[in-house]
Image (cartoon, rainbow, N blue to C red; front, side, top):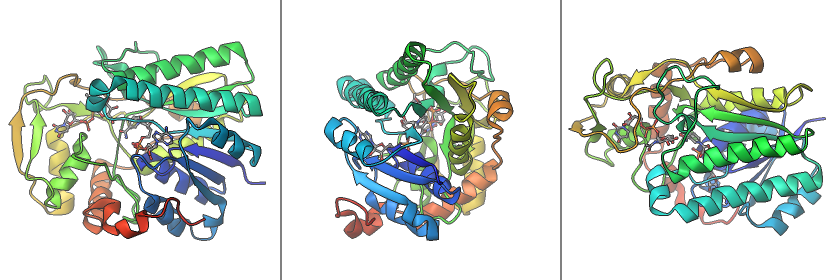
Length: 355
Ligand code: NAD
Ligand code: UD1
């Protein structure tokens, strides 16, 4: 019997790619997403890419904080596990609107955990972030490195991690995997699904992509005076398909009787600078990316990359894709969908995707 997984936020960037990998891996997926930062077209495309497995995907447009609606979904399904992506994620916006972030991310998670407990589903994979390492004093960041948060978004991740640890301490039936993602980039190699941020992108790759398709004039490079190889910030970029596969590996790990509440980094272990990323993207796309050198962005760390041994050893998972492949797939998505899913806005007017 196929395992049945509830995926919150499954229409979003990471969620849509993960749902596809789940379906292709023989899982059933029920997606709940309020589409606040995503499009029903993503679900439609996932179904197209999943072929015969599309029948194993059900989508509900719903806010996670709507407890009666969530209870109804649990009443009409038996879930083996939940992958919880749903949340707001823009750092700058979280500083402007902290209560909106605490309400959405914390109340959403608490509602989910309460309904899961009441319905006897105690297996969870949660989207945490490398943001909890702040400005690391030592790299690579291991799962034991000190954690802290510099903004309300980061604090929601930190608080939810702590809530999960407490929930597990209170009831050892819970099995929880906290995945700390490094910097997910790229798109499905088909170019049919990818990242489609609303408004002006905050993150590096979506911004570069918009410069390449002519939606932005130039990339502002935030800081060229860091103590790094070329003075620009260094991050651990990970292909979205590797990241999605990391979730399938985490689900398998939940079947291990020894698992309690565990943290795993999902990264490649390699650091790449802003200028290296720009050069790789220019090569993949054949487009020149004009640069404007600027000061450091407040809150930015200098160098962040992952220690990957724990995930390799215990999840039996390792990132495979190179920076060149990340840029190739990012450009494939961008050139096919220069305005993201908006290009098919007429399909987006439906409240929910076809089942
Ligand atoms: P995303 O915005 O594309 O996806 C999140 C999805 O959750 C969206 O589809 C949104 O509509 C939905 N959502 C938000 N609040 C909801 C609610 N209350 N009820 C129902 N649906 C809701 O973001 P993403 O990049 O796919 O990130 C997924 C998760 O991973 C988030 O929790 C994010 O914080 C975390 N994360 C992302 C990154 C990154 O760089 N993308 C890095 C680390 C962690
Ligand atoms: C940012 C968030 C982090 C979040 C992560 C993934 C901040 C301070 N941190 O991390 O909390 O978990 O995204 O969503 O916002 N850069 C430019 N020009 C740009 C954009 C970025 O030079 O227009 C540089 C940054 O200075 C950094 C690198 O590119 O050195 C990567 O930036 P970004 O993609 O925003 O990711 P993070 O800073 O790692």
